[in-house]
Image (cartoon, rainbow, N blue to C red; front, side, top):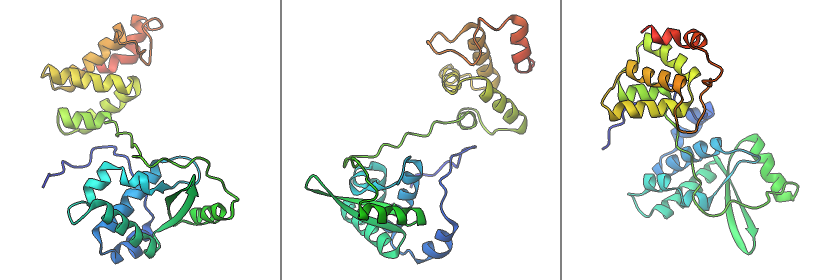
Length: 235
């Protein structure tokens, strides 16, 4: 078993209705149903547009989901089993649409808004346009924030360091912060003092990667630079 290292500071969250925990979760006795249901909550929360749904093809092509449900049998069979159970329970809504001679299975969370959307689709009042192709739905990997980078590369975030990290997060682009942590790690200089010096140097001299900083060198005189970054230089 791979041991989880813990949730990083400022992790993103997926909202799930409280009633799921009080009325639905206690009734679920099938692991595939539970994993599929939670996965769909997660994916649909990250989608945009109206209505939000996911196709069977997207689920089937999602490597994280399929790895998570395999082990007790065929993963595609367990996926179907989990979906059918969730639909029968009323957690999910299922709609089959015919398009170009092919049947597409669509799944929605059983909310009031999505119930109305499904009825509008069935009546022809709501057109979905081109359906999502039966291929993996790509979830963008969550980029580590400055607190996660600190904990991973240096150690526990203290209250004093937390204030400095918040300030640095406001001053520098996220890509600069990640690159500064990487440069420090490559040189085995794992300290916030060293990393902050890298960021200060890039802010003053330019990063030489074609990406402008939050404040350009041209409009920052030495006096203005000290005013903006003096609190960092005092450490």
